[in-house]
Length: 391
Length: 189
Image (cartoon, rainbow over all chains, first blue to last red; front, side, top):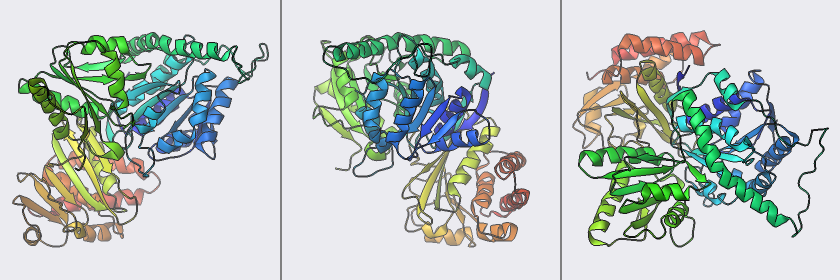
């Protein structure tokens, strides 16, 4: 039975964590993710979960403790943001290459400098090549649902990769909104017992982890990791189908909103997709064929499926909440661009928006659609636009 | 959908009031958003909080620029902050002050809508013995906006406060008295 609730994004994820009841949570506080381990440590203190909570002295240690715990055979989770994840950097790569399905709540916040506590996606976009699966969440509901599904995705034997569940700092993490949560037992049944294939505390089958890889074998290990990421796509869809049977809520690799007959479309991650939906509704009522594609899965990137979904759209604006400093558009823009390679008569443009928490309004998003329409009419426009910047 | 913007200073419970309003409206079956806008987090610094309350799911995730109502929890913010920016003239401005609506209107240029006042300081000090303006302001907001019935709101708040102050029943009683009084004493209606 679904339970109607009102929770902030951080509360929702802490509740999901409580319902999953992992063996170990190791975390170090950083705004705006602090509340996740804060609430969770209360559940531990109150005896509501049997999890070992490890209060560590840095994020590097948090991820190190997660790696040790998961390698030992325990289901392990953490939460962080921004510079916290930056300090985990070398351990992120160790976690994914050791094929440890750790689940992390990554509450997106701008990376320093200049120091800033507010939301953008520079943290997760910076970690896009670290070998972690990345799921993005528009709302508290999606953060909750993704967090529960992440366990099953990462632990699937075709995958065995860590998963980060990304949601917007403050906008989602600290806003109280309606949500439907599952019963504790339903979540427990959905995630099941963690039964790792290989683990360090298995006395019957002793293994060694993290040994030196010389040129004779390193390449093959990377190829295996790449295959796991390729395999993840189908597993993500299978887990989503099972989750839909449980909850009635449908998840895929991305969400299409009024896209099938759209002439102009926006591609955008996380909370701004909600604001974009409100603008699409408004423009549709004026007869403008506007649509939205909201990627849920950024790693692995669904190239073929996005090509199929966007192939008919004449004007596409890809909005990035991270600069990326490629000199040629944001990271989501370049990925969508390669997905659409070779398709003729598509006007594609990159927008950088909302860096360091600059608010993104209905008017901003409407201006993007209007610019796209103008571009289709006269073929003129910038390759890269900084949306809402003070000129 | 109704949109409300709250202006207060750090430590006055402005964010908490916005979250309580969202929770009470949720109990009524509404779709809700309650969220703060964080700046430098310190006592006394101006802070803003927001509410969207409606009958269908709320998609927009931006701050509120054209609110139906603005709540000023600390009247010293009038002047340093353009509290009426974007405020709908069919809505209203609700100010914590011992003054009457007329004298507040004279202090605010460029707003032709209705102004409501409530002496939240006096109510809080008399009922709680301390200055916590947020709960009396909340009572005034519900009375002025008519988001929900008075009786339902008081009952919902009783439950919310009992949950929050499980070990301090006196705080709950004082707050409910403050809430009820402010619903009676808000002027400008």
